[in-house]
Figure 1: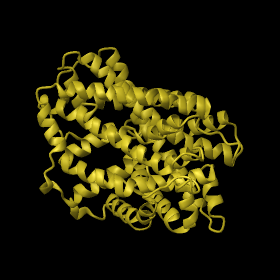
Figure 2: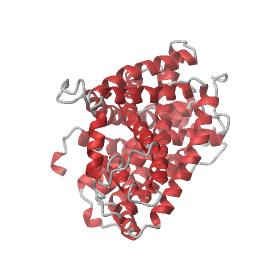
Figure 3: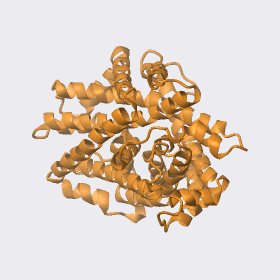
Length: 451
């Protein structure tokens, strides 16, 4: 589609694509996963998984997106005319709807904490006090729904402006600021008296701590941190120029995404050790442990505000990318305007996001398979739909697409030399699907003995 809109600049394309990968998985999930799984040993396996599994699957989505210059449904239809792949497109669309619905609730929590930090209301001294604050907040249906809806409205205001004036502009502004805030926090963290213990925990691996559970956990974190199998990367690649190097772009995305995760670890663990908190605190780390630490620090008010600004930017760059999957699909498959498609995707997210927010209070007793709607959306998307998407994208590019077509895309029709092209195809055929299947089965609880 020669008349299809494209990213204005390569920097904008990289910023937007990195923004789609960088999110709460890096700044929230990665530190507590590392904390619960032994620190440096976990990170070592994580880095290996990014190289052997992450980059090839990113490339696979890039090949599909850039070759077709269409949304996920149109791309699969054009590249596989003899095999009906609508089910895979439907899987990706469903994943995007489910994830943005429950993810926006967590984003609403971040907005609440940002507002409370700005008002100076985060003044307790102990993590247990913040536990009470957090539980009280999520038990309030009005506040949780209000912040969820307002966050989605803010997301809509970006999306309706289009690719260049909305998505690309937001990424160009927020991603450099996100990195700047991370570096400021890291410098401050490294000046704390317990910094050496935190760095030792992060970078001095104890390989005896590596267990099958730790290895599978690192593999899963690499997969989810990079937003693989969702078609975010495929959708953004459909806006790439034909002169972009897909392997170089994929490598940059993986490197910058990993850098954010490691910087988040450097930001958090020296502070955690300095204030005698637990590195294995788990998901409550950013809502209970860190606010308690900020109140004990000089300039804690400023750092609390900046921290939740950082989280907000990481969150909204991810929801923008997930929304783009839906907007591209609605606008191209149903011939809707950009504004109409943005309104429809936002409307769906508001309805389902509201139900997810209410699953902590008003409808907390309503459960499906023993899970609230929030937990069900999280479980189904993270443990079933995303791994399946990653497996089938790998197989589609590794086995179903013509090998010459794939090599032509990687080399820009022979204009650039890609030494790793055949290694990437080998990984897509054998390594990545095998690794993702292991993560998939573990997510379903079939490897419970590893625990």
